[in-house]
Length: 332
Length: 105
Image 1: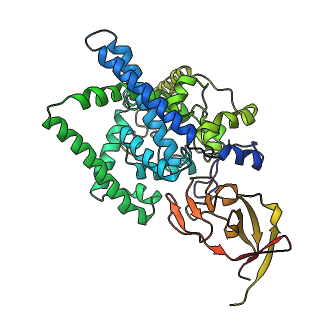
Image 2: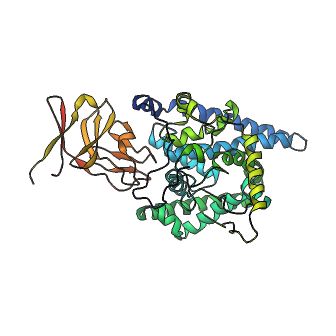
Image 3: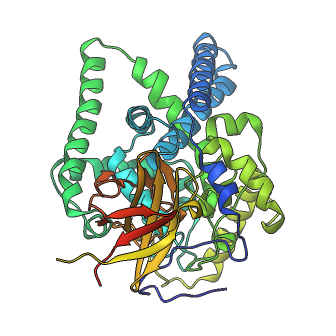
């Protein structure tokens, strides 16, 4: 395992050891499109709306359970993954389209877009390096018990953090950590965005109260809470319980067995090692990139077996770490 | 200040709408072949250390391979987050099929 000094100057971001790809081929994979993502966007929105209708007509029956899982799960995967792809600027060829959809999907996901972009950039610079990766929630050095696990897998933890961060940023309060990865000139745009973001929440809540409508709760809040568990099952496969502080992406990152239905909403993030290897490659070219390098990658497993393994690893670690071990971080 | 034209590469070393990394006078530079001609900039992104030669050229824009920040290579202007500091540009000329860059001695 390569163990670089965390203060290496200049920092060389993680890569896939022993994997090279011809420039011409990679350039072909990097090419952008508006048509492919627009078709996928349309398919996603129409199908999720249809699942929402199925959920609506199931109220009062036992069918409300599978339909809320279907509707919420696809909505949550879609919002998270599209926002992620747009944060990279790779979703659409046209920048204005990318940025418009970035706002829409980030709002649906629940995270202010500029903070999402900068914190995610840091995740790519320091993938799974403790205290450097801005999206790493916990470390193998810490006790992670069932409660911690549930806090993350139900997404309650990250939504609590998103709300807290958006509120603090709206009032111009930025943590030292955020200031580390955000250029000074971007703090005001981040504050302005957070104000707009919080404003959207306040207006949505006020309109619901004024019209005495529960539509937002039934069609967004409840399905989102249910769906976020599905989303976290997939997000949790990406890095949880992988090697830390290691420059080889094959040690810190997982791809999973692709599944056409999940990947429609997950925007091909099943190919997660491939995405970290070449973040400039848009979602639609990741299967082609996979074909090119798959012989040099670990055999991908399904999301469910990985999730079970991740939980077992956390539980075993919890049992093996002394009581006075490091505390779980409250925010990161 | 006097010019210091240095041979960077052959024009056909850089594909159309592509970039090539070169090292001149100890400086890492990037040479772009765009629909508007050849341009040269510093070879390292101003956001974090990433080699622009591994990026994607779209018209006259270079997209950084690490975080996908974009610069206009004709004037070095930072176009989109996470980049916000402009890139240094260098005059270029093409003579007899070769690309020359005016770099400080």
